[in-house]
Length: 430
Image (cartoon, rainbow, N blue to C red):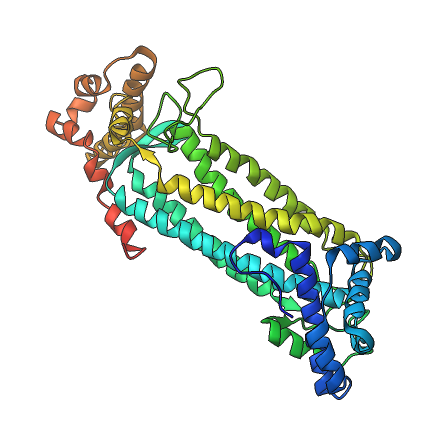
């Protein structure tokens, strides 16, 4: 008996069918271990291995009476196995089976998320190279700052994605665990060998110590890591939304032939998928908070965490799976407009080169406070009066004492401001 999970679809991990089959697998492996200890006879083990099965409808029917999901599953399995079922679940408690099965399911879900993060990384790396030397204006506080390259945005996101992969790998380590140690974790009616055997067969690590349950700080770490991954996607989506604004329009989501942007306004091209990603990131953060609330349970265990996990684990993993696929597609097909970037770069009439002038004046021996004042007054004239910044700088009586026209001209050249771009890329082997 093996789980039906195929390793391809996130949703299939969290189906009731797959969860129950994973729990039955745990029970069978526990019987195999007890067979090696001489507790379960060979003929009984054979019956368990070949006959253990269930039907969800029958499990639900039984649960209407028992009001206990694990007992209902085991009762239906016993109906298939017959007399040998008396060895199933021997010395175990429900959480032994459920938490160990959950370890398998969380491990599988984390592996899928890691694979998707790696695919996102590939697209980001390609786009970082494509736009490596595409000049655009950098913005701080939403205001033009200094020139940069569009590729640096992708490189920054790629760097963050690498950290998210590392975080998910660590989360995978924390949640790829199981426990079969009985009612309060003392192995009162089960040999520790059973736990070791089952976990090894399932690709899990036995926890060093448990109560009745695997401790929920592990699950909280996984869910908070998922929330961080979602926040990174939200960060990318927010930037694209800002760049797609009509008055900027340096990049935008791909708009497919036949796509409609508004029921009222035929001209609309809206960043709807990026907006969706931003919204779903909020859900992931809410679920992470719920996971943190699950860490503190009464004494050796209560059941307050269980109902929460039935929602937040499938929802968060499925949501991040969806968000990663969507964002990877957005970035892969992103429409980029370098001409608009140059127009926007020049929009402030050279104000973005103010630091070059400041540094040049200081280099000539001017006190920094004085140099700052001279440059700023000409910059403010541009902001408030629309005066030409460069023309005013060239005519400024204080500045012209120290800088020639050619030296001022050199301050308004963006390329030398980007001379270390290759040094940054070299840090990534690019």
